Image 1 (cartoon, rainbow, N blue to C red):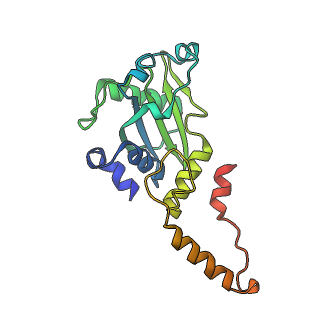
Image 2: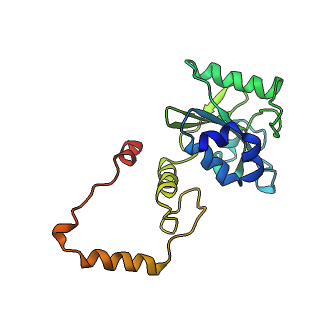
Image 3: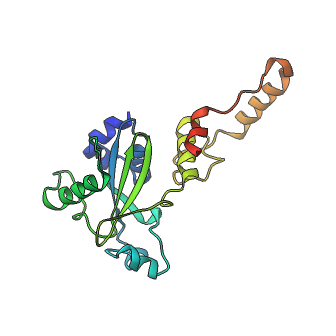
Length: 200
């Protein structure tokens, strides 16, 4: 489902909000990349087109809440990440895709990569790219994955919160049903293993 969304960027771009676009990228079942650019607000005016070092001198780090997902696409396999990032820089400056609506890839933009289910964020610096280790904290990514799987939005405060928790009555009735079952009939089930692997 998400891969189809990423292949059809014009549909994603017109029909999804920013958080849903980011979630579509995170949920992609195949390798993909996303271009993030700063929102044009008073809050970001001194962050726009600033090198990573200049941003740090302001006492700031790139903030995911200041960025919009401008573009997403499938990512071809590569062996050299730096060469691939430089290739994307050239592509979005020299031969931009027709459905790309942002400005040319510039300093302060971010290229997000999802390769073999691993997500990384790369700040376009005045020279090269700066990988952002804590741009999206791992716990927030796990919360997003949990929300997508369990639809339990009320108890989470990850980056993306696009739904409502079940009504209190439903939770109470499920709890009541569990209490009625004998202890021997309800063995403890460990949490899903994939969440543990993602936390490592």
